[in-house]
Length: 402
Picture 1 (cartoon, rainbow, N blue to C red):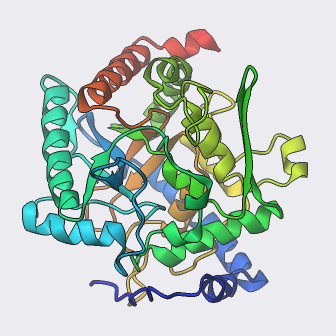
Picture 2: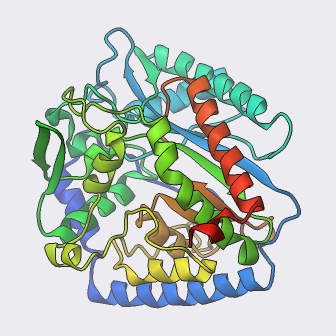
């Protein structure tokens, strides 16, 4: 059943919308949400232990995030010309060009995401991935060109300006608009202070404060998923191997040294910008080292350890309706735990898929690699990650690092 959604008013009042969102942030809702999280955690971990999420083959797939920019100038594409938003307009046009896939929406109205089909991690995997990504990017670019825009792939949209970091640029798609407003409200409420972006290298420094999280939308990634055959047994070795690989792969694959046209700063400044843009911690939490958007801080022995960490973090968006259709039926198993995991923003994490009646499986999602700048670049980075990961796992490398 398709969930009905109301259209977004192009002349919308963000203060009114935020007031409606804040209505969900009350003590009763938090209590219900937290209890539901515990119940879902207990059931999910039980299902993993009993083999419900086991699979017979090792497969992989990827997510590619990107931007829409002005076709002629390659500058930031303003969305004030359309009540449907850039994402909505391009999505509609894309269906007339290639209806075999659809793009997913992200925080920014100028963002998009594509997902590749799962493929066996053998033989022609990389060449098949390259062909699929090229075909999809080409179709998206054709759709965008009909609205005066083009596709741009990079870890960080380098020519963004401070005036672009506003809630007017949040995705207008009604199925996601209020959820992202809620996340914005949750992060700002937790912090009790504006978002501060501070990055430096040598004598160069960029420092600026924002009253919203929208700078996160200017960060885009290439994400790798690998399906775990036996999550209860396999998670720790894959997770630990990916953690070891994160630093050297970032050093090789980084492509975002400029921030607001200034720099160069870090080779992959996207990581620093992203972590600061959605950092909900108070000063006290920072002093105690509490962090929900980070690289792993330890080696894991089980997948339960990871989910237990997720439960320790306060709810950014206690939305009891998330992941449900209009009849209240779950559209994915354990939707609230998935929402909680989605507001942890950790760079490496397990994600489960499938609901009752469907195939159920768990993938390890690797999120540190920046998107772009070209499809061959992305394939080279993916080849390094998948090749090194499987080698490390098959040879027990993580045990040698402990």
